[in-house]
Image: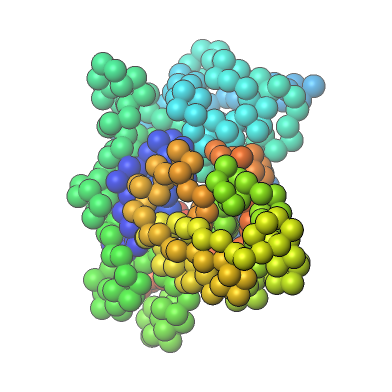
Length: 431
């Protein structure tokens, strides 16, 4: 099966993306890694199948017990679980995976801290198949969070075979390979162009029906949609609303039963002038054209009069110039940037857009070199607020709305479940 994606990531390992998890990396990650707990499936309000993150069920762990004070979780691991590389799961794999997350200061580590796990020392093995996790204080959301895309379990034995001196966490090898206990093994075969997923025929849930999946980069929406219509690919992700509307009229093509959503945010760094002035930061959200933005937050409204007054009181009544940065691989953000530019011009605020490669955008964002930027990030947890996972909490956020994500395919999608992170699991596919 061939899946067309907007971009194919240069690095598969989500733990190596400390400031933003690319959608392409997450799309591959969720196919290759399993977790201690999983999500039960249910029928949603609209009749579509969906994963229920509020109802965790056994996965790599068959059961868990909670201490009376709610601070200690004891997990019993499933026996006979093997990775796609042939290694058997043990508690040492889980322990090392948590150690790696904390060592890399990744999104997984931030999630763990938000759940009351202060360090990897809070995770202790008790033999090969049992482990305990000690929380700083009770967290009712802890079990459900373990069923999300973060805190993956790595195949320690395989990774250690590819850890040269000076690379104790397998950085280089895990950039282009996946080593988990999930349904697929992933390898980048052509950097930036293709990723191959091959089925783990010893997966504990049973061999996936689709034995080989090829993820192919097709950047333009129109080209991706055309490849689907012609049969060059079997399914596509990340199409914009216009192409999805056209595909809806094509016989023999199917759209996913429900759209998923990516939060769309404007980030403002107060270390840069004029945003160091609090009244400018208060004025900017009031200048935005929420009615023209995709699915804006409830209650948000443009108020140019109030915005102008705040700018005048802050010493910028005559306006200012700044740069609005965004990653070049997300055309939806370009359209949003234009709308923001046009609205701000009414207040003499001149914003020059700057398109950056995803790698450059992530690097400059992480080093706080961007005064004003747009981003759309996958939903990484439904149990922990996004602010708790924010690697740059000092940079203020202005919620703008949500961008839709939907899958289109040449086969019926009735059995495909909707996941909060927006990425289908290929084990659901029945082509």
